Image 1 (tube, rainbow, N blue to C red):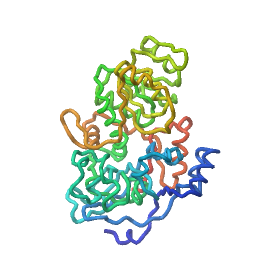
Image 2: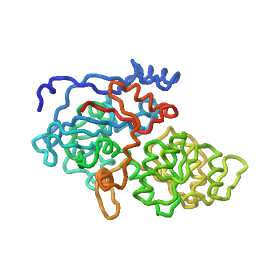
Image 3: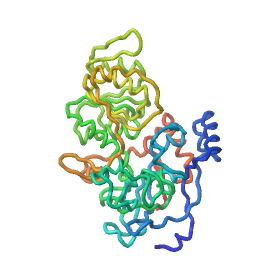
Image 4: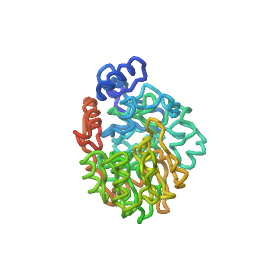
Length: 417
């Protein structure tokens, strides 16, 4: 190990849960959403110590890229609910970022699968094995690392994964992780392709829950990076023939059509219901109050927004006994959901990824993704639209918060190679 690096500090993007910083960011955000990450707010670039191996089965990774996730932006914009129960599984101050790829810089004495110089993509989950807990819990034994029963225990601070666990995150030029979190990047897969493993795996897991038939009519609600990767996965992996989507911007529509969608709508509210009914020639029902709805409708929906509005519209445009899978959490609000029971709809939450079962194979979602890339089934690399050095983090966040102007899809931090 390079002792010079050990003695030096390195930069990291830190989110601090301090009342005066949060208040300053909140007030600035009310004036301008980009004001939250100005100087003096909860997020700032700080100097931290070069990482150390937690145990002999850990590795230190030199970061090449780290993606900025929609959940990062939700936190940065202070849009989370203070009574969200998942807050019990996070800790502060956080080094943000949970989508890193890089090169192994050093390994512990008990590391068996990796060596210095290996290119790896990192799964963020701090489940039993990274926490040094043996025997592993019942969820981890099933490969369901995202529901580990020990996120508050072991030799690490409270936290589910990188980016929300005090002291561990990918928005830094070096990080340390357990060897079980690392996946070797094949020679014919680039770092740019590999850095999309996390968002693709989120989409892949949601579609395994949806389980669409190739002849199904599937709607993708929201055309950010997750929605666009969902269309890519529907078309190329699940071979679904009929895909429509709902987006916000013309540039999203153009990309979604290139990825395999049949039609993209850019409307919202009651108008989108009428447009979908007209597109499919479905009969509409008109209540005395509220939005129109249909009994016939699409077979399945992947809702990447999960707001009160998208839930209500989704239930109105699903067919009887249709299925809606939603990813992520928006601020809870009331919506009319009588159609949930009346149409006997199935609504399923989709949380990240772990070991997945697909085509009689069982392996981690990241491994499926890397195999898909290696075999030439997909190549989502062009969805990376912007790269920024960490020092330009404000510009990176500005870019993501002004998609209509910037045409941003996936924004990543790029570290010196």
